[in-house]
Image: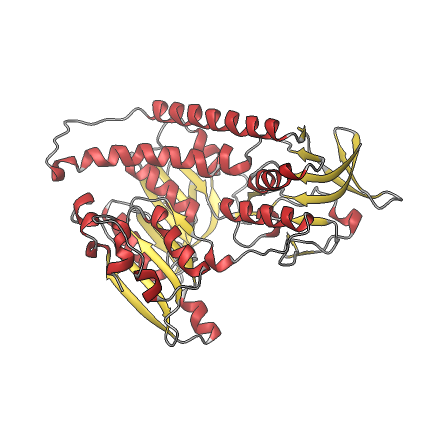
Length: 449
């Protein structure tokens, strides 16, 4: 059977490609070995946010008296929290599956592998012991948890984010290895529900891909809530539940009930059969150009398979760009306009340049900082000790907005404003010329400059 386009992976990349290609009338086949929706929907972004929202609701009851509302002996049932998560994800999965079915694509639930080209130049794909042929291929194979070579790790009873989502009880004590987005979100979740949490991070600050000043403020807030951070520290070896940690030339041991490994993910490309078509890779990821095209002109790759951003919304954008390229349209991703967010409480979000990047590239810039309390609505909605900081980098000469960084709720919602400003190359005056409703936290974009 010959298809115009074969898509490997039913996550954000595949879904965006289908949405773009469906109106064209092209014959499309989608291969997905697990569940439609990929890691994000089934074992990543969405279930994590469901659990975090429940934690935030519980947290609100703990400070309700500061708002004149008195809640006596608030409690939680973590099994019910997990059940709610499972029910919501099941509903979202069914809705996503229905969209795929209605799009008219052929769906094959199987692992797919590239297997060279036919004499007619068609790309051959093996799945379920059948051979499929396609004129073009889009790879969106996703990623898997990264397991670092820590002596004793594989022999210990550690869990990854996947298993953490399936826990039905909150661990009394927990060691989190990794202070990136995943590590901080799970540390936030379980500490809110009462876990004693130790977090180990090799870098000089948590969330090393975010602004260090804002990340530091978030860390201090969670330190005041009981999380013990081991910054600039390394897990040297593990024996059962005990981790030997080195820091500043000294070693010590940490022992907790559970070890959560959250050091990141790597592209899942090893079983794709890329070598059969000489598709080039670099540092464990597929190489692509700005149109998401690989070294093979008829094969495109997007999302986690190419490394880089490794965010669901980045994959959505890249999948659409690849599909547009197949349809003959010229488009590319503006990576500087893609926001990132950490769904702790408070949230942290970022878009555009980091200060270290501006310094490395020699771009002249100014820093604009303001407390989120400049927004009256932020003051009304938060407790007095909730941190909040707005930080922007502005081109010193043109006054173009180069980067926006936010600490404080609802940063994950507000950062899209910064993303649009950067995508449109807005100056400070152009952004301020927009009218923000009062009172809203979004008005920080007009008050802070």
